[in-house]
Image (cartoon, rainbow, N blue to C red; front, top):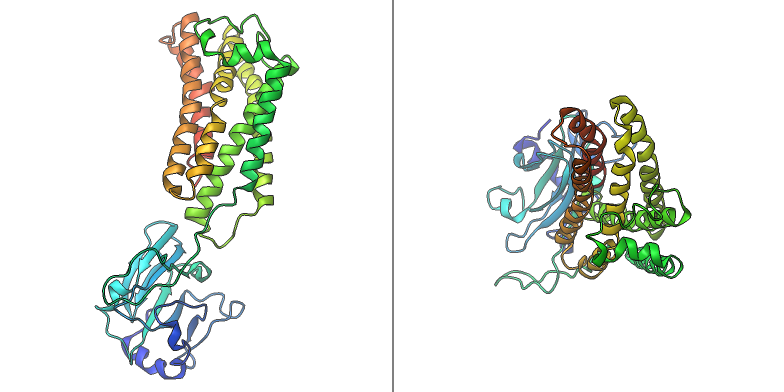
Length: 378
């Protein structure tokens, strides 16, 4: 599968003019494949050469200038310069490479080097290769040629701003129309009153329109943050600017996530009733579900502030903001589960193996599944 150095010299001449002089230290979309019948490199055609596992490209490398490329690689994808392996992907992810670091150890053939992209079991995703040009604000070292300018790429934030304004209006409307419920949920001065909602509108969770509206507001807030996390992941790590995320895509995500979160919170009550019937612990269902919903609603009011942090800082430190968002979502869900354990322990000790097993089945395992879907899905 790999090319021999002798073949490199043999196949060079017919395609020596494929890259113009101004294309120095730049990768192009002109890929080649090796045909056994003619023993030549011919232009790659996706329909004809769909089964080729090795694709090639002639490069002109100026050692004094960085040759930065980025690509999304499948696991075990390998890169070669003149038959010498310079890279192997240990996992499916986005990578960046400076080919100039390897050019000095590779002998060029008539001033050219053959870049080979090879995968042992499938055709490499060559559409994922691009020139990772540095910003002009980064000063070049002495003797290096000036680098061309690349505009800062960013996640489309318009839908997030609009939905954040909608969330602010929703919470404002809830405060005006349901002042007692709003104060009971979010007034920190009442935090010590454990029964502040037990006799109020959430004595039976989701039994009133006001409680449903509060849950919907929380669902929209969490959906907005999850959509931001997943859009950020796709922009930074997975699609690597190949498939730009449009406003319509983000809006659809937010709508779908809102519905999914709301249904999860509603169906969780039915799930608890079913599991409590199996374990014979029907008496803890209302307390358990009420505390879970109360904790989520209280912590959920801080999610819009996390979104403000995302909108203000994501352009400058996207990886850090992504990490902070993931941690905060994880803490939100984890604190809700811990609150359930604490309150249920006041009714009956969780050291009881039967009750502990029930809580693990209804709280810990669902928490692990949700975290996998939200935080660790990529």
